[in-house]
Image (cartoon, rainbow, N blue to C red; front, side, top):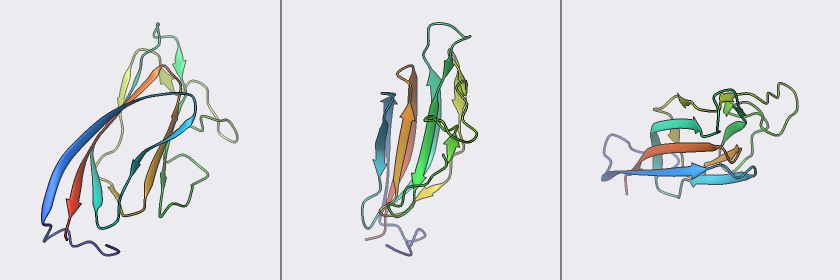
Length: 128
């Protein structure tokens, strides 16, 4: 599905997932061949004990399996240029941009503290 036919899709169905941070990079979405994912809901919640705690979190959209060096969303969790250790207040929720599309073989990787919870909703679009 290098050029997906979104106008004549044969099926569109919704999915969602919740991911709790582990401190390690985790691939949370992998778009299979012959499908397209359209992100419809995307939010990160800090679940720390106080609102003054800060949560580290970043998300990377890897196109065609090629890892990106800079986070697509958030701040570099692992440090480096532009690293921040206080991206998300401990007791808050932030909504991130939606409407973007993952093509076949794209992956989405999250790295976040254990005090972070990510909600992602998406549509699976098939033109087969």
